[in-house]
Image (cartoon, rainbow, N blue to C red):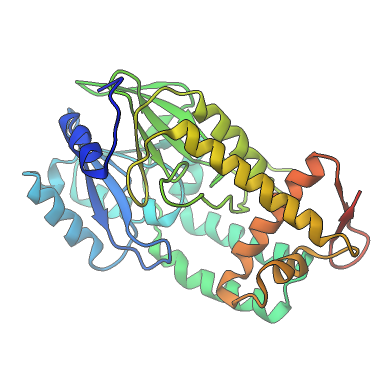
Length: 338
């Protein structure tokens, strides 16, 4: 496939099928819509991501596998591209029904094995972050309560194989390079098939929307400082820009073509948004939540944390550029022009 120009979705999926890769699209209860899992017909028979832990999910996955002539019990390897529950939720159910290896980034393994414990810590951190940055306590408390429900769409799962950044994941007919690309989450990976010019990009690079760089509890040791996922994400995008591939298969939406141009557009859009937040600080200091309200108007409760993550991410970019400073002297953190 390398060197071919992918000009349409149908052509892209036809080329993926020639390479033995087939999208299995599963519904999610989330605003992002359906999730793409990918069946790689190779030895071992491999599933990349597995959908959320919803009542109908496993049955639908079995039916989609059946349409390709396989049973769930035939799956021997599940590769998790990152920690979000629309990509990991069915991993344990699959492992209970098939003699399967679950593989993920080595840094993710402890959290995936103890998902409830990790999720509770992450949700508690998110509540504290909201309060520090001006979100009303009743909103922060409501979102913390919702998080306990949403966490049920995920599930702890055994991890049998640890994937390390830069290593080769060898199947019978192909070799996939595992590339750690943090930013959208701390654990995102891309699987790069250099020979075929294909990259399985998870949620790191999507065709239709720019992935949220959501503030998330880091994996492993952490000094308690606020994570800067947008800065991480920009570095990851620049690294992916240097890869050679004609077809990207993402976790949501259609296939990616022209990834360098797409990444350039995403980086430039982030810089424009950061400049807008800088403009909003012209009249004096504001909290991150006040900036979100100034940018979008009244914030729906369900969007309070996501908008806060976006604002803080772009403020981190402005702070790194030396044009904004952070004042932590009060109960609520405020930002002002340098």
